[in-house]
Image 1 (tube, helix red, strand yellow):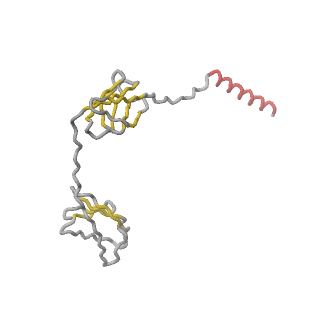
Image 2 (cartoon, one colour):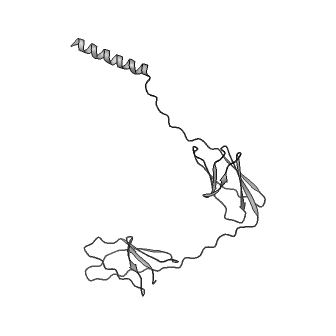
Image 3 (cartoon, helix red, strand yellow):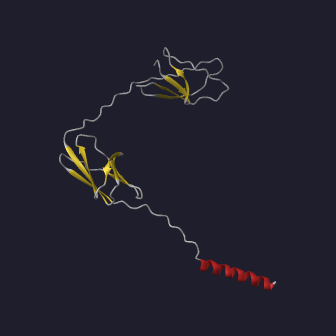
Length: 188
């Protein structure tokens, strides 16, 4: 494919012209392991370099680039339904399949969805200071229907710190060590 770029082990080697690109390699150098050929509008081709040419030898590597198939966006519109997310923390952010829908206010967030759109599969609720919550959406609203989703968010556990010894305990320990040292010296 003319105009396609060629890489050996992620190192750019040139652009194909008249269907060919010749790449010189040193027989004493580190051998290449893979190659790829890419061009905008085409699926990138990945291949392995199975062997390396010897002195004055030519090895041929072939690649076929296929046009990228255009994707059609799902038809959105038509009948409407709703998800209502109930949560115990106001101000938490709600996402459906990583698409932000809003924040919880007075314990709820209602999100409108088109019943002909691509159905969501997960919902995530997050807020700083709380453990994130992710749930699976297994029920989809029909025309005029509301599906309720419930979330209980838990605060992030605060690490516990051991308190230092009180001055009385620390002083008592030092006194005992001191007395033991004095007693040990008297016996010598």
